[in-house]
Image 1 (cartoon, rainbow, N blue to C red):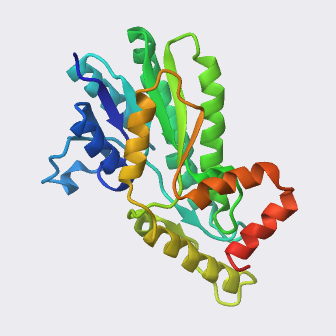
Image 2 (image 1 turned 90 degrees about the vertical axis):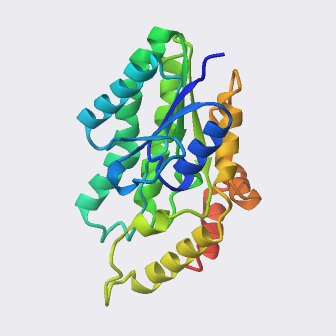
Length: 269
């Protein structure tokens, strides 16, 4: 049986690397991407190619490279993403645009790039990695929630638009996992004398603590392996600790103000 070909954006570390490692161990032909492959000279877990999701030419070149090498592309996993924190009022707008370029526009360009090939070969799977944070507006993480929420809605829409092509599009929403995402996250500075100073500082400490105590990212890899082997995967697939997933149920059933109060209590605001 011919190996299925997988392309993972942001595959050099964290959740992306865990996904690629696990799928390679299951016999998939995996291509991971990074903006600067030269930074990983000893990387030998799977093929690592250059791609910057903020650059459409880079995307087209990478996708064309995989298709020319393998003749097909079976699975796209839109994993590349960045974090951002800050009071909405005080976050520099250029940083807002950057996070949307990576977390939202990048995956959209990736899907546009692979859909013609998947349609030509009569099938394929696209997995968009969003976040449990994308189902709710979190204090001082509003822009991150917005990018992930927007990608989740695009997933819903594109599933219906492509239903006749044999292409499966789904959304995997991780909770907190122990990765290096905090190191690359943009933090708007805590400004002395800002009306948000105390609450924002407390929230950053809480967010970093949640990541540090997060689960093993291989849990996400195993969930994706299961999803891409299903004929009809669910639209939304949250992955994480029980309470994080249960928070989505609570949001559906509780009055808005009650749910808001739970979030405020969680962040001690």
